Image (cartoon, rainbow, N blue to C red; front, side, top):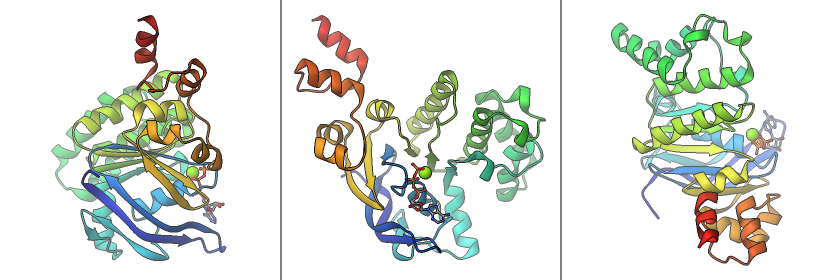
Length: 270
Ligand SMILES: Nc1ncnc2c1ncn2[C@@H]1O[C@H](COP(=O)(O)OP(=O)(O)OP(=O)(O)O)[C@@H](O)[C@H]1O
Ligand SMILES: [Mg+2]
């Protein structure tokens, strides 16, 4: 197992209504890797992500960041939240400023008084996320996909070590989806740890270094995409589907699953 950046040590979480959303979760998030969390609706993915970023505090058990236990005092948890940025499943819960520009600079102003730095960080993400046309707009007037881009841009501007994205591609058109994942890849190539949740098993298979499978508040597997999707019992019991590429390979009797469709096509041409 590679070096882990975040550890869940026997973590349970119960909402005030009594729903146990996480049940004794033990998990190591590998440093500088791309992890994908899969699981049916209600499996506990969003709850686990809110715990990762310190917004929720475990009912029992503990979380460790760089081997140090999370401290939930106001001052210390802010440091965790700056280091572990989160993109919410619902962008409206994230957007608070009157304009896109202020949305992007809001977090930056909280961590620095250096106006030049704030401006240069803001300009960097405005350029990267192609936000120039909407920079003065109130965020609530944006389309869902635009909101998502603005939220991610605001997170990236803060340069967190870990980026947690809860269903980053939901509501995005194909080009925006590609742009979003290209950006996450770029951040990962700079050494950032990326954790996303998704229902897109095809994308998860091709993109993830490590897949975490959740079922009814439990983490039931953490393995490579090939190992996870080779396990039919695991897939069926957690309400998932196998990616199309695995389905095609199974139908063609190909035992060694290729890493993506291009590799499969190459293999079939030989
Ligand atoms: N704010 C809340 N108050 C009470 N119960 C909640 C709350 N948020 C989630 N839950 C419950 O906790 C459990 C886990 O929900 P969670 O949102 O973490 O699942 P999820 O895997 O993210 O699902 P989805 O794929 O639909 O986003 C569910 O049973 C859900 O009903
Ligand atoms: Mg969710």
